Image 1: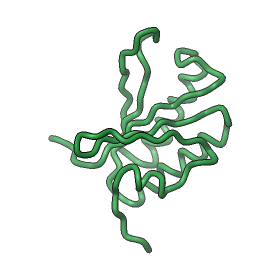
Image 2: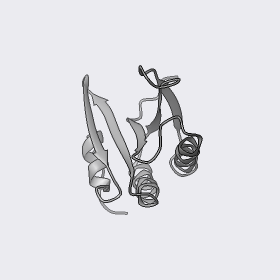
Image 3: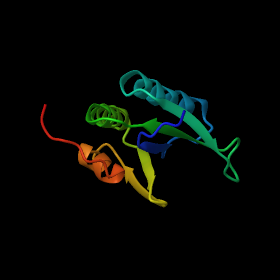
Image 4: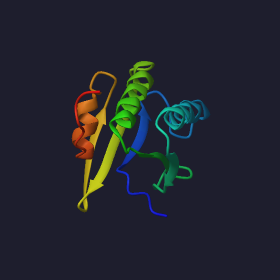
Length: 125
């Protein structure tokens, strides 16, 4: 069964760690675990890239509600805030066009995600 929820592709990066460093892999796995626990449907994919052993891992996150977006933003903020050398490249495809934004702990907001996802949400409780 196909999942029609908007999907966010996330690539975690660090100025301090090589993508294949086991310490970095543990940090990314912690991000994935937090997203799975709080947001829901999350999986990892490996994109083959020349020069990278095994490719670069990306995280695929299905966002289907205002609550999921809010939870994802809070997790992103906390994860980025633990190490200022971290960044997240967030991308989505809409109508065949990929849209991408790179965020750090200082540049993360719920509005950024909403704009990227072209996701209209009702305000209020």
